[in-house]
Length: 303
Image (cartoon, rainbow, N blue to C red; front, side, top):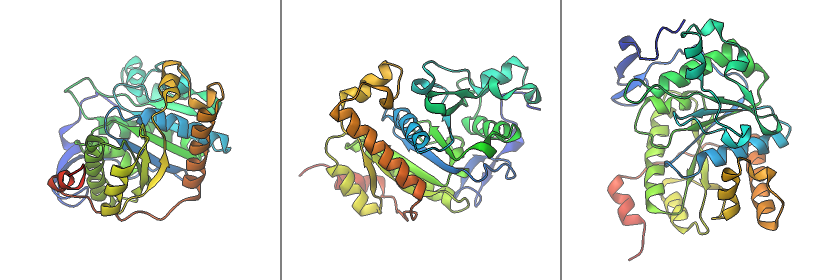
């Protein structure tokens, strides 16, 4: 039974080996495993298009005949907005309705069916300044496990809060097989990507997660991304241009697969289908080495 959304002191401790050198982490229940599904965690700078990417990738997997679960890990709780056509109640909302007696929840209190059968969950988050998002992610996975939903799932996609500065919001990395980074062809996005590479490297020391690759988004060119990838050992798995139809799809509360067909829209749909097929087949992990912050300034840009 969950008594409160605040984090008990004993669940947070300084660890010098478990989750990265000198890190302060929310300690997850090691017995809570997702199971046999392929698990992907989508990271990237805030506002880069992770939710749009996650939702369309979820649909692409579903069109390959896979049973897909998308978990939004952001207090903004709009990850599944284009799949469900509205903001859905979060796990925290559902827990509040039963005074945090988790055993009283039903699956349909916090899991909702979206476009093309994609199952949608919004973890939500504690009120600002009062708790840890990692705790919420852990409780969400635990609830899904207790209700046996994960046994009927082929693909799980975690859509994660933008800026990875907190060990708690790195919590999905403890469940993921591959972490994918969404970035644009600009300095700020690539700087954030470098920080994410650092976070994934820390988790990879003790968990199965590995870097899967980069998704270039909202970018016609990729020269800066390519330059960074060549230095750290990453590769671009998919490229989505600065296309106004992508922006409009979110305003229309729909995925790109629901838009009126055009050559540009078809090309983006095909790229998502190609990405999903590639991820399903699997790939070798990328042993990337992040750069020092100051070195990124020297690498990117023009003389």
